[in-house]
Length: 81
Image (cartoon, rainbow, N blue to C red; front, side, top):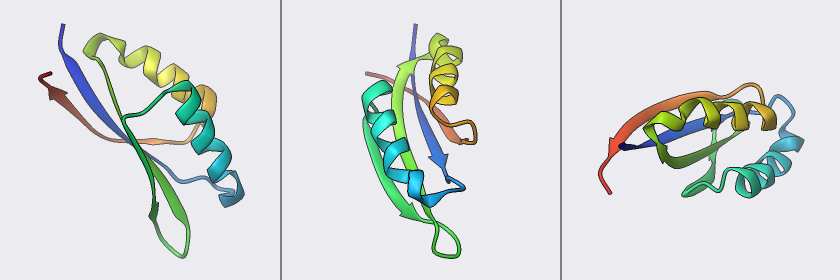
């Protein structure tokens, strides 16, 4: 079974929720990398990367949906570890 790295972007409608969402992602998903990035009109986007088993995508999406409903999967790439 292979591994994939998933890159995700979240742009909260309420920018005051950014730190709360970031904290939940760190605690529950434990990403390899997480950072904030300038988006449009002064908004901030939260981006993170997570390595998972390629068969674990549905479980990953369920965990992410429980934290925040509106997210974008930017990229999924197979990795060889």
